[in-house]
Image (tube, rainbow, N blue to C red):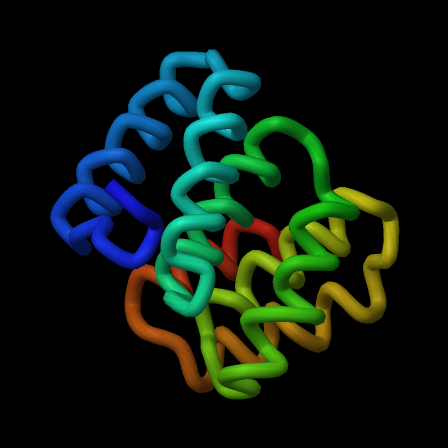
Amino acid sequence: MSIMQVSSELLQLLSQAAYIACFRGDTKRSQVIMEGVSVMGKEQIPIKIGLVIVNFYAGQYRQAVDILRRQVLQEDPEHMTAKCFLGMSLKQLGEVAEAKEFLEEVMHKGSKDERELAAAYLN
């Protein structure tokens, strides 16, 4: 099966496997899976967000920031989940003032879930 023939269902299944590994504490395996998924579905923002999430939970905040700034927000500058994870990652890196700007924007424009996540990092 070539990269072009990979179905969205397979990418979704692999992404779910990566999330399961991540939330069970196996962040290394989760990252490997999501990096593979990202290569196969590189044009899809949800896959990029998945890669950000596993990097975030693995403590690789700089990598998450890089993906968010250079890929996701370049393609969709108003993506609130991306801005939320950017704010969270920046806060973890000690860049509190910039993090607060993103998190406050999410508090005003984001969905209920995004606002709840942002609120937890604003405190």
